[in-house]
Image (cartoon, rainbow, N blue to C red):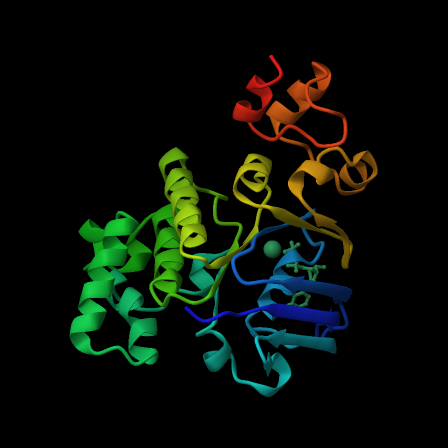
Length: 269
Ligand SMILES: Nc1ncnc2c1ncn2[C@@H]1O[C@H](COP(=O)(O)OP(=O)(O)O)[C@@H](O)[C@H]1O
Ligand SMILES: [Mg+2]
């Protein structure tokens, strides 16, 4: 696998209607990192991550994907390195069948027919979509349709996978599939960037959190540092995972790092 680092230098984006959605964001994301992006609705999360594969171009500053400046390269080329899974699958899915949706990107990156067929079967198997391959994606429920969107991007094996609110609207089994998929991507050395309101997922599956607040990146660090940072939590109305609050009430841990999982908490009992 190749290495793709994303480097943002003083990135700002003002939409054509004059709304300034992000400003002055500096961040570098290295190959293999598990990163979450959190913050209230409208704080700029989606706008930021759509810059990471060139879907949006900065109106200020620069983004480099590896050695490619996103201003100077077409999204088709950038998307081979960084895949973005839309928050709303209806903005992504267009094919008449799940099979066609899963094949489309694979054709574009130049795989031959038998390679495509193998890949489609494998990815359908991984995401429990095999029985739906011949169906129109719009005949599936929202959560399965969202899974199709995720599978079609991951099938192309980009170095970096961006998931925009993947667990929103998913049931228990959908969330489980997503977490397993994130763990698999991590084991393969992929970078995963996940926008989420699901704090247990942020705490347990990612190593670094970017907190957006009203257009600005106001925190960048490990979840164990975020969930003891009262000023940031209050400012952004973020609630730590239940196990973190419970552990704090019980005086578990060392007061410098938040307890993030039940396995962690048990050490202090
Ligand atoms: N296409 C657009 N045109 C104009 N304003 C937009 C557009 N998309 C988002 N915005 C605005 O930009 C701000 C940030 O939105 P967004 O990045 O979607 O936030 P989040 O993902 O954190 O909810 C909001 O004020 C939103 O209304
Ligand atoms: Mg969003």
